[in-house]
Length: 157
Image (cartoon, rainbow, N blue to C red; front, side, top):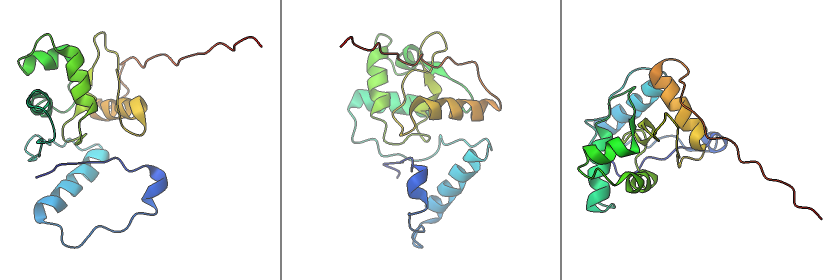
């Protein structure tokens, strides 16, 4: 059962050790599926068994519903709240997504804000990675809106 998935920053990839030789067949298959996914092959992770015990019952319902979002499709935070049986809990869905320990397998990148806005993403590369994953699954650049960069005024001296 999978309990954690982590994005490895490029700078640490060259330092990482080779994978242990005692991986199960299921673990080796999952690693190959992730490699294939990154290559643009349509991979469905819905059957991957996950350990969600670190979350509250509400978060577990949200993550289970999120894992059912098909490849290449998106739902809003509000729609995911409805799918999980809590139609007024869109903000709480965002919090649950930020606590997702198994991104990609529980595809929180497929959850967007209303109005086709990307919303947040807690990976090391942030929303730029979320956009790249959505583009990858769409097979082309998407028209999802990135949030504007915050501009700060210089304070007078």
